[in-house]
Amino acid sequence: MATLLTAQQQEERSGAEVVHGAEECFRHSIELLEELGFPMGVLPLKDLEECGRVRETGFVWMRQKAPYEHYFVGTGTRVSYATEAMAYVEKGKMKRMSGIKSKQIFIWVPITERSLESGGEKIYFKTPMGIGKTFPATAFMTDEEKEKLVETEKVEEQ
Image 1 (cartoon, rainbow, N blue to C red):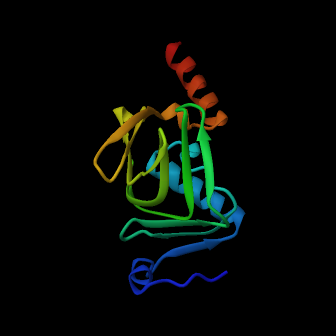
Image 2 (cartoon, helix red, strand yellow; image 1 turned 90 degrees about the horizontal axis):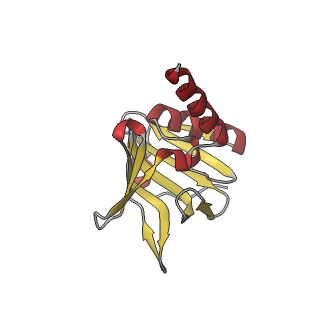
């Protein structure tokens, strides 16, 4: 399915590495999260159709078949992902994010930035109003990542 892009969107995506299909997009998104230092569960998108990245500017986007809501048990937070989520990324940070909202009490609040803090042990989420919340990175780790963390801690104790 082709998406009509504005001239600005076309310019932002100029020179992008683009992948299509659920399997390739999943692999691409995991590689991106690992490169940035974020846990793999921080972007639980479903049915990805297209992922793109412009390395020179850090611009990335991920398009899925339909909007998706996810409940993060570790934070008690419901998050909504639009059909397309975009951001500018660099090591330990995603900024100028769009397409992601968090439900706070009774309203949906856009999340515009997330960054790693305390040596990667915490993730700070920021809204357009400059207000934010910090959560432990473990709240967004997959079971596999948590197992590796426990193993690493056991080795360090010895």
